[in-house]
Amino acid sequence: MAQRHPLVLLSHKIRWSVFEESFSKHYCMNNGRPSKPIRLMSGLLILKHLRNLSDENLVLQWSENVYYQYFCGEQYFQCKEPCAATELIAFRQRIGEEGVEILLRESIRINKEEDKDGDGIGAVVSIDTTVQEKNITYPTDDKLYKKIIKKCWKISEEECIDLRQSYRWTVKRLGYAQRMNRTKYGHKKARKANKKIKIIAGRLVRELARKLPLTKLGFYLNDLKLYQRVLSQKRTDTDKIYSLHEPHVKCYTKGKDHKKYEFGSKVSIVVDQQSGVILGAINFTENVHDSKTIPEVLEQMERLHGQKPKEAYVDRGYRGITQYEQTKIYVPKPNKKISKVTRRKHSRRAAIEPKIGHLKSDHRLKVNFLKGIIGDQMNIILAACALNFKRVMNLWITEAIYRWLLFYRLIQEVYLNCFAQKLKMGF
Image 1 (cartoon, rainbow, N blue to C red):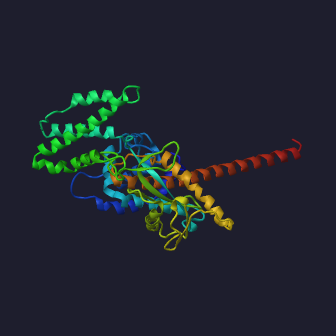
Image 2 (cartoon, rainbow, N blue to C red; image 1 turned 120 degrees about the vertical axis):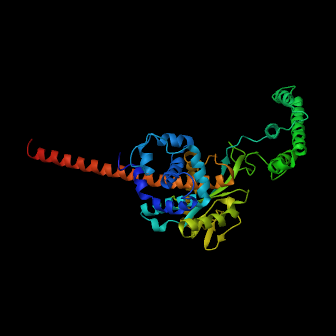
Image 3 (tube, one colour; image 1 turned 135 degrees about the horizontal axis):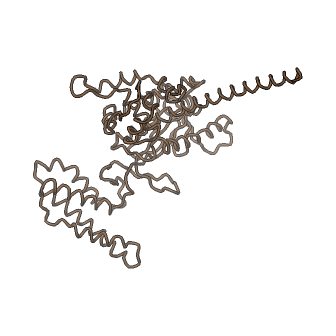
């Protein structure tokens, strides 16, 4: 095993005892079967976002990769999977948002130690927001109505409720009519089919509400209310439901030509302008204005980094705020008397955009597969943690290449000196 491998060096830099002390309170030492080591589960959680892997692929690759196993604390090569993929879900639910913030705090500490000017990190930052898309299909009313019908069929089968009419063949026949929506003579039939499917979904929901016994009605009450809300919502409503299994998803329009609408949640990111270290990453379920996100993300930065920045540079989407406590917020605006230093810092703010791009393409922020609001919060923090660790690993790789180039230059100079001495001696 190469001792200078970035994962080996990173395993030596991380203070694993901090994770064990913080997460041990979530475990009971007396009941149940023995749990997996905390270092193993924490290491798997870091590797998942560091290498952009799903839970299933992670446990498979762990059994084949020596460096993954050494990073997670193994002393000998293991030919078996470390745990079931579902145990990672349970571990994330155990530690929660507070636990993943501890991972992000550790990544910030390592970057401060490895950076030459680590004491200056956090004085001047850039802040920006983006959309964390949820793993849902593009929402349409027809899809939601059909899903409601299928859910009602499932409830009736589980509770042995005899529906007056199931409409199975009718829904199938209406689906054929909906496919002709873009043809010359099929648009009118498709529009009638859409209306009929909505009527059928409403009939099934009301029939289930009548026929469910009182002992079971409370169990399905929230689902029935959700179905009724979907059926009653209109196109001009503001707080709409776009997914049955992720009802908290919101619709965002960022003005992108290639993607007009994005369905998920808004995230705010704080990046140090000097080093590029992510000092804060927080999720917002509601569609709030960008200027309203600054207080919460700066409070999180203070928890993780220990201090708030003196200056924060943002884009024009943050208009309306100029200062929060001791932090000055700089929004670009037409000003011919602006200093060169301030202009340079405004230009430097654009460096946060490729950071967001790497978070989405390399560290699982593009599509969030974790369920619920807590899944949105944990996914952005783990992605930021992975990008910070990746930055340190890239620094070590660059230093190794630089040392190798120096050694090669030294050998070259020694060879040239020996060759020059031989020429002088007449060889």
